[in-house]
Amino acid sequence: MKTWRSVMKRVIVFCALLTLAALAHAAGSPASSGQGLRAFLDRGHVSLGDTVTLNIQGAGALSGTPDLSPLQSDFDVLGTSSSSSVQLVNGNARSTTQLGIALRPRRTGTLVVPPLNIDGLPTPPLTLHVAPAPGGTQGAAGGAAFLEASVDTASPYVGQQIVYTLRLYYAPGLTGGQLDDPQADGAQLVHLDSDTRYQTQRGGETYQVVERHYALIPQRAGSIVVHGPAFQGQMLGTNTPDSMFDSLFDDGKPVEARANELTLDARAIPASGGTPWLPAQSVQLKLDGLPADGNARVGEPLTVTLRIDAVGATAQRLPEPQLPPIDGARVYPDRTQDATSEDENWLHGTRTRSFAILPGHGGTLTIPAITLNWWDAAHDRAAQANIPARIIHVSG
Image 1 (spheres, rainbow, N blue to C red):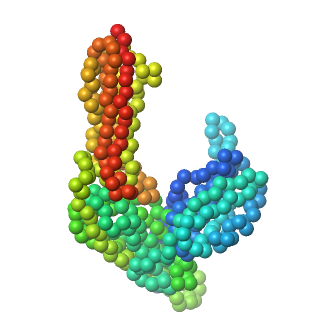
Image 2: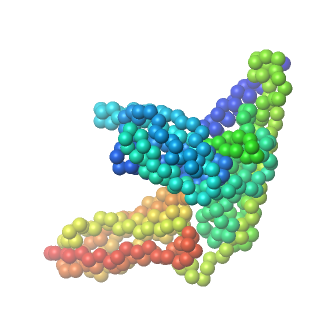
Image 3: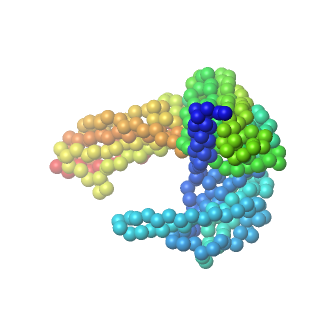
């Protein structure tokens, strides 16, 4: 007879699995037909054998299911589902209906999800990138669980963020488990956003998948080994129980899997890297607060805000926003405000600083151009973010 503690452990583990399996993340921004319908895929990049969901949203109720035959040239249509919601905005009720269509790509490459017609309105076309079924697994398809690990590039620069992707495949009957984080000596790893859940096939078997993304940032040049994490779980016993009551007290069979190790060749800062060294996917400068009419008065301060936004870098890697010296005015800087957010693949760093500009005399006041050097990691080249010079006419 199992103890009550064993029963509670089993129930807690089972609840943890349900929580893990429910995590999902919609990749990319919804596209709009301009006529009241929005369409989006839950992921923009998949592997052959994966399942992707096409979501169609409309205001009010959507009558029926659209003709799905245009999808069948490139996709297997696995099923549909629908849901509705109501929101109260300023006392007014707004209803939204969402239709989900489960698809499995039939080939690799860049596929176009064609427009569908529903309620007389077309949905916009969408693009899906389908890669070959990945290798590098430890554990085999057909087993209870296995892991895959991959990176988007194996030769990043020091300080450059890349994406480390981990996929846990598990068969029906898994009742709980614990998935560790990857480890790397010489690199920083940050778990990005929420996990994505979907279904795929490997070796003729159907698996549920939990996909997890990490931001990986090398801290030094040279070889860096990323140790794959381990998974430990429990499967329901294969023996037929005497009764349903007996199955509740079955502790299950232990299941273990470990992801493959990956080796990175981190590159040193290039000679043309510039100062400061700022590798990123994109960098933008923005100056707000200047008078729209271009006029100011002596003794009346102008409050402007200089903002630096970077995709693929934390706020701590960005330089402090600075205004260049301005002839004929005094500049009083405020404290810098830092923020780092994330999406499915990238860190988003922001540094914002306000300045009070006090004109000292009448005439023309020139705010010089502002330039920030950075490294375009997506194209492996030096780049600049610029704000052009601005002219203010000061009276008084």
